[in-house]
View 1 (cartoon, helix red, strand yellow):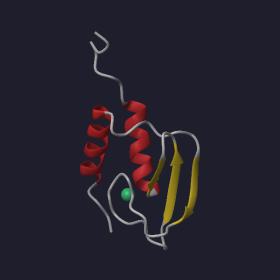
View 2 (tube, helix red, strand yellow):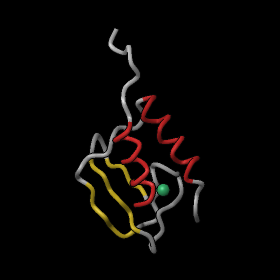
View 3 (tube, protein in one colour):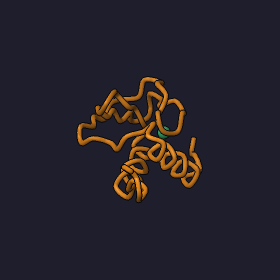
Length: 85
Ligand SMILES: [Zn+2]
């Protein structure tokens, strides 16, 4: 099942902006999927797929492809200017 990448990217960006999603940490493990939901695209990570588990504030599970978008968006993400007034 393939999601529209642009839509996913936009969703991740808005979560980063609102603070409901934090930048991914370096501590990421690849496991076999167990049918759990991907935190980024909200689709199940099937047993035939890889489950990326990132430990930051809590455990975030995602597809490798979703993780890549998350990482790219987090790397390019900067807090809006004028914050911390
Ligand atoms: Zn996903």
